[in-house]
Length: 330
Image 1: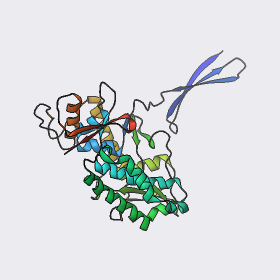
Image 2: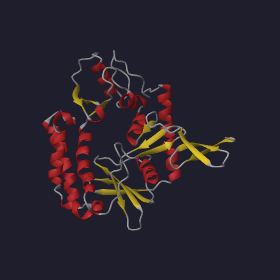
Image 3: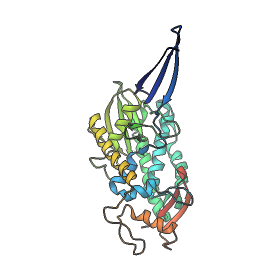
Image 4: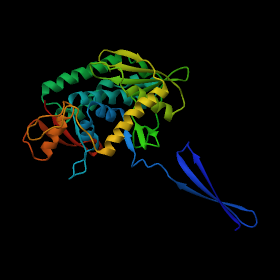
C-alpha cells in the first residue's frame, strides 16, 4: 500500500455525512471502504408540533406538565380529557376515515353510524363528561356537524393526497443544527386540477382561529418537506356552521422563521429546565398561583402526590401513547 487519503463528503438529501477512505495498492486498483457517521439521532431530538408549541406559548409551565413531566413511579406522562376534545376526536375520525376510500365511494358510507361507533369510545367519564346532560349537549352538536357534511361534503368528494407516515405522524428535521423535528397530522389535503394542493383543517369549535396561529405555517412546512407539489391554498372548515375560511398563504421562508423561532424557545427552555407560568408559580399549600392553563395540571400533581383529597380530579386510566388520563372538573 503506497498512499492513504481521506475524502469527506456531505449528502444533505439524506442528512448523513459519509466518510470515504480510498486505499490504493501498488497495482493502482481502488478499494473503497464506506463508513456512516454523524447520523442525526431522532431519539435525542426535540420534537415540536402545533399543539406542543401552542402549549408553550400559552404557558411554559403548561408545556412542561403536559409534554415533559413523567410520573417518577410509572414513567408516564399525563393528559387531561375534556368534552371539547372528545367531540373533536369523534367528528375528526369520521371525516378523516373517509380518506381511506376512493373519492366516488366516500359519501356512500354511513357517516351517522360511524359517528355513533366513535362516540361510544368517548362516552361517559372517559370522554370528560361529568353528567348525561353535558354529554348529550356535545353529542347533539357532533350529530349536527355530521349532518352538515352529508348535505354538503365540499372537499371530501375530491381527490386527496396523504403525507408519508409510519408509526409516527408525518415529520421532518426543521433544523438539523438545532436537532429539532417538526411533526403534525394534517386533516385533509385536497388535490387540485392544476396539480397543486389545498390544505384544509377541520374545526369543531365555535370560535374562529385567531390570526397569528402557527397551525397553517406548520402544515405548509410539512407539505413542502414531505412531497413535491406546490401548496396553493390553505383553509379552515368550521363544521358547525359549514363556513370555509380561506387564509392568506404564508411565504415559506416566513413560515419557517416563525416556526423555528418558537421551536428554539422550546428547546432552550428544555435545556435550561425553566418553565415558569407568566402568572406566577403555583403553591400547592395555598392552592394559589398559576394560570387557567397550568393550574388543572398542578391539581393533578397534588392528586398524584397525595397532597389533596380534591374530588375535582378524576383518574380514568391509561390512554393513548401510554399516558395517565384525567378529568379535572371546573
